[in-house]
Length: 97
Image (cartoon, rainbow, N blue to C red; front, side, top):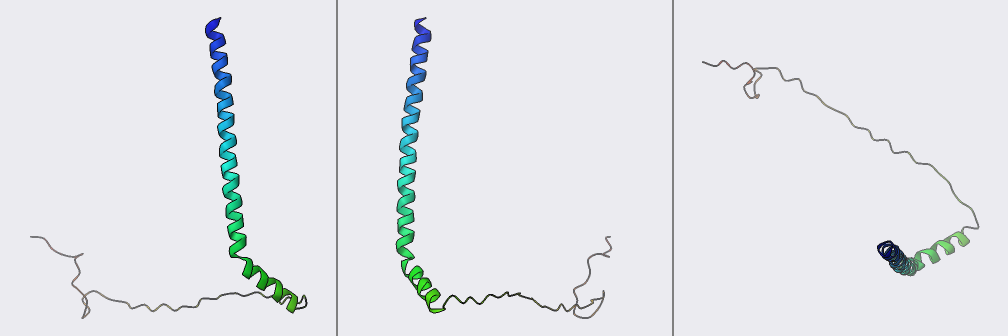
């Protein structure tokens, strides 16, 4: 009876400690996320301002387009026959003593 009560008490205590630890971890993650968001907002403020000014200057006209990149290449091949000058001797037909 006493052993069961002690086990139940320890289970509840460990559950409470785990919950408190998870709250602290989530709070730290939230604070780090807010710091990162603020840093990105601060670093991109000039870019956002320039984009707003450009949008206002264009009077709402957007030129939409599509681009396709076509890569062209040519392949040159050279047929090399066995025994042709400038070619290393072939090792495929070597005779062994």
